[in-house]
Amino acid sequence: MSPPQPLSRGRVLEAAIRVADRGGVEAITMRRVAQELGVEAMSLYHHVPNKDAILDGVVDMVFAAIELPGAECDDWRDAIRARASSARAVLSRHSWALGLMDSRRNPGPATLRHHNAVLGVLREAGFTLPMAAHAVSLIDSYIGGFVLQEASLPVTTPDDVEAVADGILGHLPTGELPYLREMIVDHALQPGYDHTSEFGYGLDLILDALEARRRQSPDAAP
Figure 1 (cartoon, helix red, strand yellow):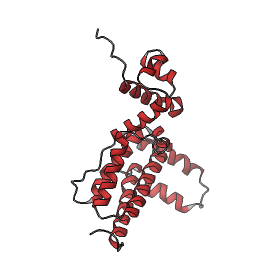
Figure 2 (cartoon, one colour):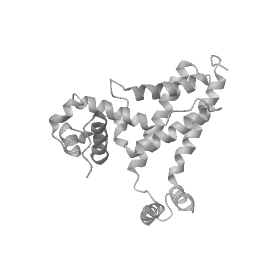
Figure 3 (tube, helix red, strand yellow):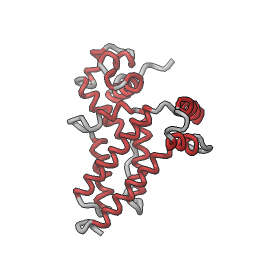
Figure 4 (cartoon, one colour):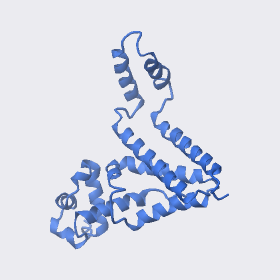
């Protein structure tokens, strides 16, 4: 039998993330994190001074899990697209973090590196500083909103889609709401339909629109 792992800041933060994954951010307390680790709450204070430090730490760990945009990409859109897809995947596993990520006053090193890398891709691509700020706000709002919407959907599999669609169709008044019926029957219920593909479609629209604005701006770098 292997000896128990010594307690560390990293283990405390990992335990806090597991607690939040099950019960949301409100479930993160010193007592519950200690229970997750099988230790007394007082022992946590040797590694984190308080709950705020835990919240700062878990946000930084979430940012650390998101792929940094690669500056080596020829097209800035490819770099931001990869980062956005990674962010969506990470935040889908930890959707409780959405309300925390922009609320902490003491961002950690991974958070700062992440923001710097995103801004760096945009600035090196020729975005002016105001345009880069607009782009970050727009892209991150889209990612966060999509993750929240996806987490709330009552469907996760094609069978779920069919069951929900059948329930809606069964209650539609005959001869009424033709466009909704068309969307369900001729789109959502067609073979190969995958609602998760909407993320990439919307993201491409945003990136293409930002590229058009970048090219039109007289102040943008070439």
